Image (cartoon, rainbow, N blue to C red; front, side):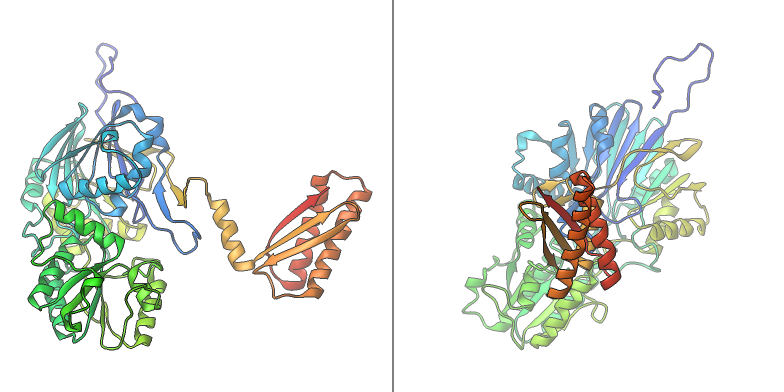
Length: 559
């Protein structure tokens, strides 16, 4: 990339200053958000999230963004900003920060509290990082080319920020994740006045949350969810088990207040719920009218005096609610008269797991309440009317829909074109695109490496798509291992799993086919590698012909 500050031939026009916006994750998808901005010889990075695996990504624990570009240009990175404390925006930091130079990382109080908790779990010490707390409205200078102003935007977690980025090329307004909640739980609405002022001053590029771009109207306020929850909990006669996203600190605070008003004591069950509650209390975002109880301390209370807040709203097998549903919890058993409230919607890909839990709860005989039949959840993302409001206030010259799958981005772009003052140009970008931005230019000029890095157990990046394909094939077709022992007398051993039920006749036929291929190869004095390949091909053709199946075949030769 050319540096605008370099000397130029006398009399020639200076090159137009331009900024590169490089999404490395979170563009064209929901999850693992990370964006790099580059101007000249400086890079600023925003967020570093993770994503959770789809059903076909078997055995994978987490997915983090590929950061080859940042590693290749590590010396240019001048600073990092974090928009909020959700996993899809900070969950990748323990894997990414140690691989890059130590630079200032700016974020609000709750965000940094959650980051510190996460880093400590990985043994990353405070001295190994440079975390700097900011308030909404603060301006920070990153390098010589970037000034960032933190912008309050309501979302489903406190201390959520958008930002106004001022560069020599122009001003970028990034909403971050947001909704325009008119009744925010903390009484701090989105700073629309600042967006409007930025629009009057001139916004070159708007980058905006597209998650709910297909939904008309406005997203439901968190205050309405609280009113619905209070009415519902008041009608419950026995114990109440409420599952929600652990990061939804506003909702947890509302539930604590509701329980207190209704004469119920609150028990927290689940590691992530406890972690978020502790961090939220430490930074002043959660106040307790009464201390939380442990399950061991509720023995003297009547059922109608207890409310559990627990993990498992997404059906995760080892979380609390699924263990309760399937009777695997060590200390608590559900019974008739209990009520279970799922104050959440399934994340795409989790529908089957959530439905399995709900069905099991019905079988136990508890009362189950969940959306959409009961309005006990609200999205943290803006719907069309709110998206239009931000577009109208910001009045951007250019527009980059972000944080959503292609259908969300495209619907957001179409919405922008229906407004009285549409952007001059809108781009639908992908991860890895280099989006070049200047006063008169807005286009994709190239790509950088981008994609997914799989975390499987202690391994980071040692699993690729080829391994996942093998896992899918094994799950669908099974596995067949053939071991040809050449001495003293050639013979073949067969081991299969997930292929067919025990079938001695078929096993003998496969052994014969394999042994014939081995005998022929030995007679022709072929290399052992070629003998192995011949055995593989012969068995593959035979199995497909006889069974119509394609198990994963592993041929071995023991000389």
